[in-house]
View 1 (cartoon, rainbow, N blue to C red):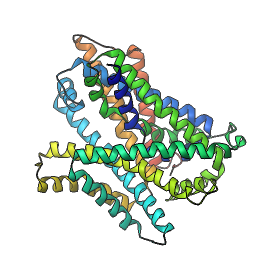
View 2: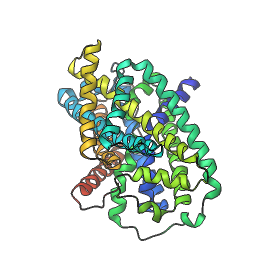
View 3: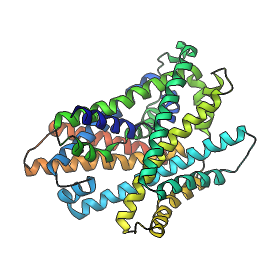
Length: 403
């Protein structure tokens, strides 16, 4: 059982850690490291509470295999319809973000070798590579994803180790004066760094519905990415400095510029390639996981066959829309993450609150209740609504844009 709990914790951590961390130094440079860590802790708390609510609903409906089944059991077809729309919006937004980021990183790596390609070509190349892997099958994606995730963590550890002696502690000094608008605008991007909630039903089933085990898996598993994010933000800001990073924020190639800036402080020519590889692996693991999830989801919703023709039709449905979004909105990596936060709040806050409200109202057997009662549910809804309002504030120009 201990191995199951540990495995579930790593599943939560692995699902969270990925391309989103590339945007975190940009966000924390704008807010200041102290406020960045504080806001990230708030978003981690909201994310973890939402995960525990999903676990409560899943335990009340052991016959359901996934969140879609739990929605059908407790909220009926209307609730399932809302979840489908939110799920598609989340998946497409994330895919668009990863295509944008991946194409920019690929173009930068090729440019180092003297090969200069337009964005639409590198974006299409990234999509074709992912499409081939996804169409080939889940087993291939699983193997490739595991290898890339391991390499990403190894590179991250090495990069942090190399950069630690180069940190200037005056860069980490806590400063005041950041506007409320900047702090609010940071919330959506920070929240998407903890998007593991689709894996919660799997975790609950894997640990046999034992509350102490899935609590440990969800809280401990999400605390690991939080710790890694804090170290990563502190190292990058400590080496590059917040003013230099802030100057990159509004560039369409902000992530690439940040990676280049980190590489320039290492003092070795090969370090630039390591930084580029780290960014590529971070984007690749996230993109593959999201693309496979969306592929399977669309195949189920539209009843596509598992033959080659059906899989090709499904992969077109999966990747064509986000590819077009990335091409017509180049450099939209951080922006797309903000849009994804809206759907994630619906899926990981509003829907779980509605589910457990129904579970508790029905007094379903063998109840497991997350602590906090009605006040905690109300607080989660208010904070989740604040994240959505912040994103719409960015969209209409009332709040500053990040990336």
